[in-house]
Image (tube, rainbow, N blue to C red; front, side, top):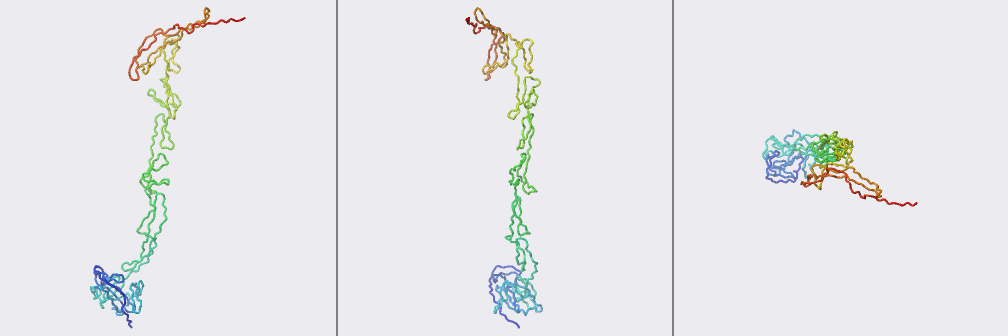
Length: 474
């Protein structure tokens, strides 16, 4: 017995849009306009809006026709053109609510309903353009065919492959459902808000950074090297000076990367100290400094184009000069040469007792036994008058020697009678010499030259000394 049911009731809204849209999923044509709007969804001319069955023999179809009107058709599923092929059933999710006068809910939003795979639509010649018998096409997510016997449209959902289960086991991944080509698939989506934030501590000279791999959702955090040098727990910028424990090593932060540390490598230079010292000096290091210094240790004497090294506190005398000696002394940490030159006194052989001329013990100056008689003594020296001096040594004479001097008692005078004589010049001459003054001028100077000396009587102070008589009492 057939059970009659009233056509389904549903609010359908349509509108006309002049914007042409090219599609291959239309029932009517490959080029149509978006002109029907139902429950927030746009449909083009020829699209099937719904195609459901009540499960007891009736099928309900609605489509958008060529004039942008919604056409609803109710047919008996029992009059299927292919009753010999039992329709298969599948789980079909519909978002359309269908109700009957008895308020029987046939399909609800987002509810799985057992519906036949095969549904029937309008006549093939009612489509725009009309469909030919056995012609197939895809309308939305359904494959449709024009039945050759009944010339009606038969549609069934697109067959979707069975997808294997998806495991989202990486950090930050979440499982989401996505519709691709009318089939719902599961895939892993990346939500960086779910990525863990690691507590990373980097060594000196490194900073935390992250890299993003196309195969991972969450970034990989690593310690990246900075463009710095690290020495003794101190960070140095490129070009800055790096202290060194070795005073002869000078280092600065370079630009080359050390392959072992991945940081910038210090560039060091070792100072080249010149340890050559002249004669009489010795190279000695200085504590805390790179290079040492030459310290004076001996004295160096240059005599007659001969260089001689004299140790400190020792005396050296040239073998061919007995009148000079060189002594090396330490003064304020330096070796100082002291020249000791003997200046011989004036020597005139005429003042000597003949045959007594000789050289003193040092072997430098002539000497003799002087004649004690009054005679001329000669000495050569530079004559200096004010700021003028003779150009050559001048022979200066003097009288020196013994003369008779006595003190004799005279009974007549009852006194001591003094007799005095002095060694003094007897004959003299005048000589002239040229003097050069400090301003460069020359003057002529005349001085007295003693030719001979003799003993001359002279007045003694107090010619006699009187004696007072004393009378002695008996």
